Image 1 (cartoon, helix red, strand yellow):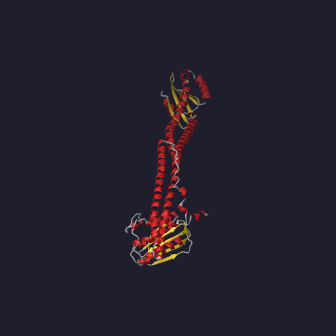
Image 2 (cartoon, rainbow, N blue to C red):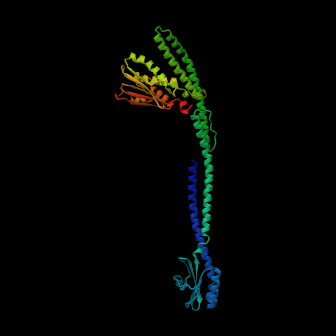
Image 3 (cartoon, one colour):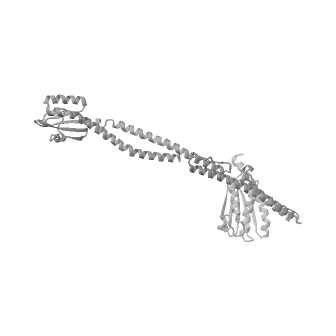
Length: 433
C-alpha cells in the first residue's frame, strides 16, 4: 500500500510539474531571446543619428567602437553602395530595409536586426547587426537546470510526505492484520490499539468488540459442555450397571465395551470443547493414536453386526503399532462413521473390505463395499437418506484434516463406494521431537 501511494503521488507530482515547468521553460527561452534582441536593437539605435547626419569617416569610427564594445558584427549600408563596419553582403532583409522598413529576421547562426535610417540627402541608409545564437540562448540552459532541480526536489518532497502519510495508514492496518491472525490462532486476549484515521480506529474498536464477544460465547459454550458432561454421567452409569447385570458374559462384555466407547467419545468432545474455549487446557490435536489397534478394535466391534446382517468382512491390517496424529477418540469415531455408513447405505448381505496400509507420511484407511455407491447428497454436511445426522463423512474428514491428511471419495470397479481416509503422522514426528 505504501508503494502504491508513493507511485500515485509521484505520478501526480510529475504530471503537475510537467504542466507547470514546460510552459515556464518555454517562457524562459522566449524571454532570453527577447532580451538579447532588445539589447542589440538598443545598441544599433544609437547609430541612427550618426548615420543620418555624420560623414563617412565619423560613421566608420562610431561603428568600429560599437563593434568593439558589443562584440557583435555591425554593418552600415549607405545609399551609394558603401559598406562600413563588417563587410557582409546585402541580404534580403537589408534590401527590404533600404525601402524604409526596419525588421528582425531569423538566421541559421542567430537573429538578424536591420534598421532603416531615413533623412539622408542621398537616400536611405541601413544599419545591420547579427545576434549570435549563443547570445540568444544565454542563461537558458542554466535556468532549465534550475527548474529541473526544483522539480526533482518537489517530487522527492512529495514522496517523503506521501510515505509519511502512508505509514500512518499502513501501521494501523498491519496491526489489525496481526491481531486478526492472533485471534485466528486462538489467542483470544489479543487486542488492537485504535490508531490512525477515524475509520481505522472504528475498525479496531469493532475487532476488539468481536474478540470480547468470542470470549464470552466460548465461555458459555464451555459451561454448557461441562453441564452436558454432568448430565450424561448418570445415563452412562445406568447403562454400565445394566450391562454388568446381563447374564451372558459375552453380551455383558460387549455392552460394557460400547458404554466405555461412548464415555470416551463424550470425554473427548468435552476436552476438545474446553480447548477451543481456553487453549491453556492443552491441544487435543497434539495427541496420537495407534491406527492399527483402533481399526482392528472397531472392525471387531462392527463384525458382530455384520455377522447378524449376513455381511462378509475382509480385513487387511498393517502390522502395528502404526501411530498417527489423531486422538484415539476421534480416530475411533471416524472409523465408526465410515463403517456405519456401509451398514446405513447398503442392503443387508453387502460385504465390505477394510484395508489399513502404512504410508511414508502416516497411514491410509480404505473402506470399500459392493453397494450402490455414495450419492452426491451424502457428500454435503448434514445430508442423509437413511435417517441419520448426515455428519459421518464430515467427522472423518475433520479427523483426517486435523492430522494433516484428507478424505478421498470414489467408486470401485463394481460401482461400490471407496472411501480412503489418509492420516498424517504425529506432530512429534514432524518436529523431530
